[in-house]
Image 1 (cartoon, rainbow, N blue to C red):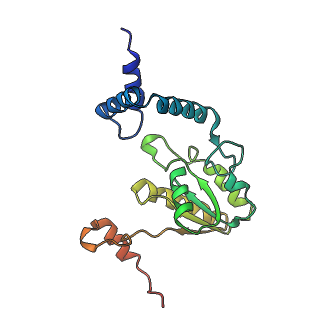
Image 2 (cartoon, one colour):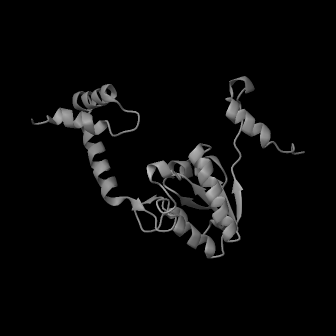
Length: 199
């Protein structure tokens, strides 16, 4: 039985995270009924991105060239390296903080049940970079999930093996949050990692 183009389009939209059958149908109908020019631009941009965007040879972030703009920059602090799980995490840190070091994008986190080990995260490349001797601090910015914490511990051990100081982002009560609405795990962690108030 032949699948219609409309059914193929709906199914194609379903590859996006959080998009189920109904949402995919709405998207497909929208681009066909109201925005065919936009759909054409989307199609062209998607085809070009899939064809031309790869990974930076140094940090594993998305890049159109062998080395991304961040790694090619001479103004970054070569003594600082921040390990993140995804390109989205790198972008958030870059936009929200004053961090001026380099990055290493894991493209995931350790998850033995899913078949994701050190090799899949490019940790041999990270070890080689730490062994160069230029990095003095590895900022570990993995997410505070079970897999993220396991990855953080692995990275800290790897860092220490190369004489590099591992540091970890602290996790706790969000700025502007109210204690009664914070989940127990977050509050417990924030309480356990409390520090002295600055003057």
